[in-house]
Image 1 (tube, rainbow over the protein chains, first blue to last red):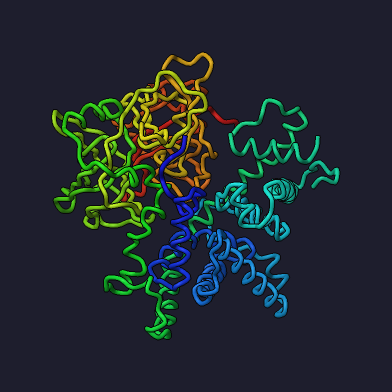
Image 2: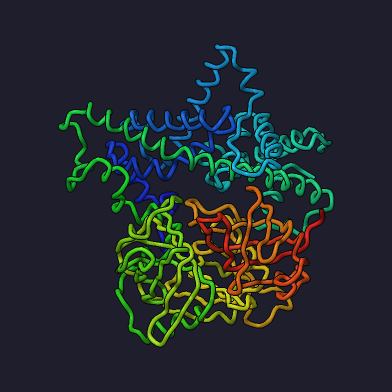
Length: 198
Length: 409
C-alpha cells in the first residue's frame, strides 16, 4: 500500500517533481524558494556542523554562511536527481573544514579539541552527560561523525544517508557500527570487542 | 559473527525497535551496546533542537539581509521569469507565501489531508456517523485538518476544521497553545486555509462535534478542503498492513484507544489499539498523527485489538518532522498532591493531574488508575504525558498520562 502524499524527499515521481521544481526555482534565486529551503534545512545544516564546532554560536554562524554561500552559488546547482540538501551538506562540509583549518593556523586546535560549549536547556544533572556525548562525537572520524549526524541527529534513513554521503547503504551501515562503537568506547571507557572490526 | 551480520542486526533493531530473535547471545550483547550508544546520541538531538530553534530567528534575519543585498545587486533583466508573479513585499515572498510549494513541503505533517481534496463538505449525518466511530465525548484526541472558517476573538476564538470526520468546531481558550513552526503565535493569526494538527478534548451535542483545543500546531499545507474518506473498522488484519495515522483518540477512562489509519488507497481504518502501542504513540517526540505504522496482532490479544509498530523508531520521524505537541516522557521522581515531578531527558518537569486527566496503564506498570491517582506508587515509574503548558506556572497540565514499568534505581 502506498500513500498518495508528496514530500520534497519523497522518492516517488510526484516527490521528484516537487523537489525538482523547488531546485529549479532555487537555481533562479527565487526568494520564496529560498525561504522554503531555509525553513526545511536550517536545522539539518545546524545539526550537521554543530558537534564539529565549539558551541552553538559558532554553529549558528557557520550554518548561516552555508546558506549565504549556497544562495550566492545558486546558479551553479545542477539538479539531476541530487537532493538540494546534499548540496547544502557538501557546502557545510567544506565550510567546516576551512574553519577548522583557519583555527589550526591560528593555534586554536587544542582549544577546539577541548572546548565543548553547550547551551544546555536541561537540568544541571544532565550537563556532564551532554558534555561527554559531545566530546565523544569529537573523537569520531569525519565520515563517522557524518553518519551519526545524519542518522541520529537528523533522523535520516540509511538510504537517505547513503545518498547524501554518496556511499552504498552497506558502507553506511558499516560506518554507523564503527562510529557507535567508537562513541561507546569514549563514553564508557570500558572494553568493547577489540577484534579489529571496529 | 561477521561485521556484516552485526551491521544488519543493528539496522534491523533500529528499524523495528527489537532485536531479531535469530541473534545469538554474543550478537545480542554487542548490538545492545551499540543501541545504548544510539540512545545517548539521540540525547544530543534534543540539544540540537533547542539550540537551532534559538538560533533560527537571528539566522533567518541574517539570511534575509543577505538575499536582499544580493537581489539588489542583480539587474532586473537577469531575473528568472520563474520568480515573476503577483507583486508582494519581500518578506511576504520570502517567508510567508509558500503556497506553490506548500503541498510538497508539508506532506509529512499533513499527510493525506492535503492531497485528497476533491469533495468539499459532507452531510451532517455523515459527520456524525464517521466521527462516532473514533471520537466520543470526553475523549482525548489528536487529529488533523484544514481550517475553513474562523470567528470570535481572544478566548472566544473558534474555527471550523474540515477533517476526515467532516466539519468539526475547534474551540480556542485561554489555556490553548497555538504554535506555528514551533513558535507560539496568537490564535487570532489563524486563517482559512491553514492546515493544522489539533490535540484536545472532544465535546459533542446532537449537531456538532467540538474539540476544546489544548494545543494547535499550524503546519504548512493546502488551503483546499478535504475529502470524506470511507472509514472501515479493522477486524481482520490484512498481511503486512501499514499506513499513516490520521487521528488518535483515548477514552475518558484511559482503557481504550483508537487510531484512524490511512492505508493509502483512500480508505481509512478505525483500529482499536492495545495499551503498549498507545504508550509508543504518545511519546514526546511529536504527534501520533502523521506517524507511519505497521499493524500487527499479538498472540493472545483480544479479537479486534491490534498493536501498532512505528515503521521508524519513536523519535525518528520521517523526512519532515511531525508536528510537536506539548508533552514529556520520563520517570516520576515524586509527587506533591496532584503535581508530579518528572525527570525527563530535557530536565525536570512539573506535571499537574486533573480530574479530567486520562490515565492509561501500560502492560508492565502493575498499577491501577486509582493507585496512580491516590498514592505514591507511581513514583519510579516511566510515564509519557501529553497536555498543555500553563504559561503562568510553566507546568504541564496532563490530558493523558501513560504509565509504564517501574524502573530500577
